Length: 376
Image (cartoon, rainbow, N blue to C red; front, side):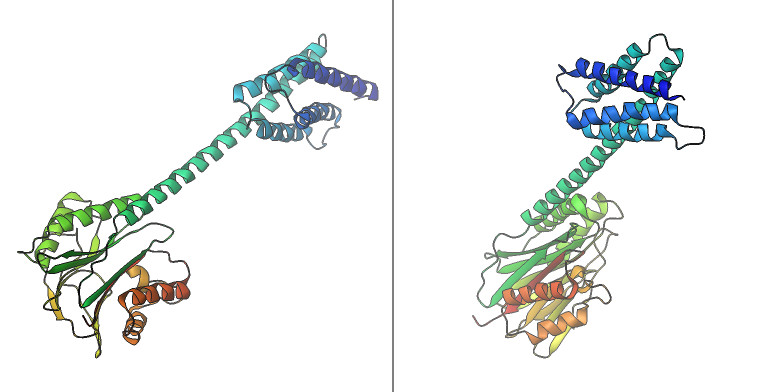
């Protein structure tokens, strides 16, 4: 392309640019200085594209890139239809008006229109995908916040005050909400304190919702003239009938008789559960399968509280915490045994702090219940 022809083409592009600026000057969303500069870069690149010798770097790629950058900048403040009108239709019309009578110039304008249209649509598609990703993340974050609210709302608001005993419970949700739940409740007329700790498979709002079901089902079946084993069997029956097969619940449930200092414990496939005295810590093994798997009967274990005896229920989030090596049940037992002099509240806090120190932020919920016999 001769120098004269190139100068002529550049002059036309300047004319087209000025014509376009005049057309958009009174637009409701007029271009700012940077957007005008990007438009001029696109028009200038058209001249380079025509003047480039065979085999030279394709200036069409540069035109597409600058057009994409222009769309990314402008689409945040403009509707896509308005954007196409301002930055494609009016710009192409200005170029055509300056190319009247030049068939080759008109063909180049058509090619130019195709290039920037493709770039604009790509930018719009990328922007939509980004918006969808952000909406999904926000939806997930909202679901997580809601699940945590459900989880915390279900926890006891009042801890029983019973002569001769201390009660403590903790729930430290992980970043991803699971399905842990604990409870202690005093029935003074019956002379019974019920306590439970449950761990539902799964995460998110589904697990948090099922926690609510487990709470109200098991609580609804409480009858002082029955037994903790019967409550567990009826709870399991409902879960087997009404929940998906892949949803399982490990749970430990007990009735404490403060006057007799005796507790009856049902363990539905849960650990760790252990009873500590001055002679050491004894595991309370499962007395039946996890809830929700199949119909089953549940046995009971009875223990009597001597002075300073401690009953501990914990979630697997405690003993599984760690990277190279899990926190583990033996470490947990030693901690409880060596600190039996502490109150139930202090023991609960000690365990949580120790797990955080050992493993950092947990990947699973940490939940526990501590019951300690004290001098009344």
